Image (cartoon, rainbow, N blue to C red; front, side):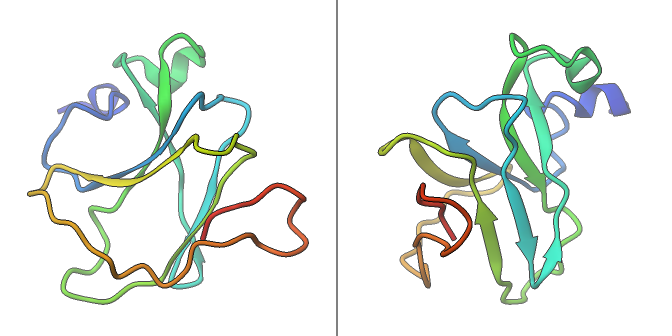
Length: 122
């Protein structure tokens, strides 16, 4: 796979990706994330191999994190700060390119005081 191919999040299934799913994502309002206290790079998901280079809302499908380098078999702490979303628009965090497994091991999902008057999810 080429670097351009990897701009389309659905290509190169060897990667472990986490999709930050919510309705109506905008190229101008990216979420932020931290893993074990360190900032994570949030990537554009695109339906085109020329994805971020084209910087077009029409090819943009949302955001994801490439978790391929996360140490396996280790418990991690993940914090996600979402842009303002309408109630019910946050759909969840979804792993791509692995077998489906469900969990109830979510420590918290709450508003962050001082960030804004709109709820953010942790």
